[in-house]
Length: 386
Image (cartoon, rainbow, N blue to C red):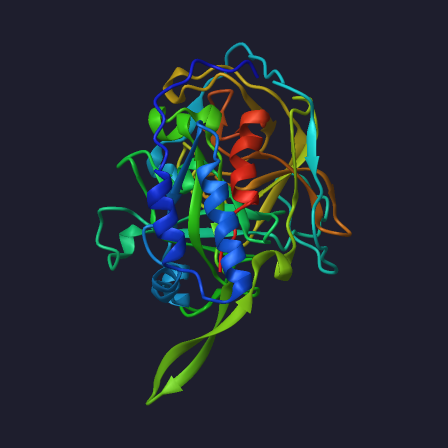
């Protein structure tokens, strides 16, 4: 990708970052070492990376989400209007340097998942799940404020990185980061109101890393984010005088529990990928084939997409896929192996396309991952969280 002229940067100051980290770090020496590393990484962040502390402490965000609230959350991307109708001349995505790769960690075994647009059986990745948040400036107790996107655990030095879309951490409608942000890998929505399943725990956000051009200009060529989450917890139901309450039990680090996908950038724009996510929104014709209750997937070969001035898109890649909103933020995994459930993150679902104008989404697109994407990832990769 040919770098664009630098736009307005909105980085957090080093002093504020230091204060935010110190307030949440235990006194143990190993934690102090991690804190120093986190502060140094924040202060050394490139000028095109926005770093923002989560608005709530991890404890407060964790306390907000009960299974009932998880189950009641609805997808947000449909409301944001991240879709395109029609199809023009395809553009080009150009590497801005040498290709790079970070290997995955961990592996999963057993079980087969459902398909998205083809009938092949695939073992679903444990790393993929839903991200949940409440809308900034809204009453968090109003169910209309409970929203979700998709995301995945990705390899990081401290086993604490979640990759998702920029619009799944930062609200273009209010120019603010979301509240009460948590990640639930392998989320499953049960049949009862209380069954918002979190089989590997719930992981609250501590730090957001986003490209400046998404924050400053809502430029969807940079619609990706890397989030550092704190150690997770599981919810255990207990009866208290006939009322079900949920006790939180520590679950440890995200990457230790589900592994982390690899990461790669500056690859060919024409590669074969699996795209995973939790679609729930309707097609333009109103048909709603997905519920968002379980993970779905698509499989295809990527290719450059046309420019879209509405979203400032110039260098997106697309694949044939009928997933709808809710799948936004879900990973595109190159070299995915069903036996290990691991591959290399090479894209993030960003925009749904009705390319032939028949009121049905038939493609999804992702920003092209280049060296600037790696710059954002690298800040998250080096950030410790408790």
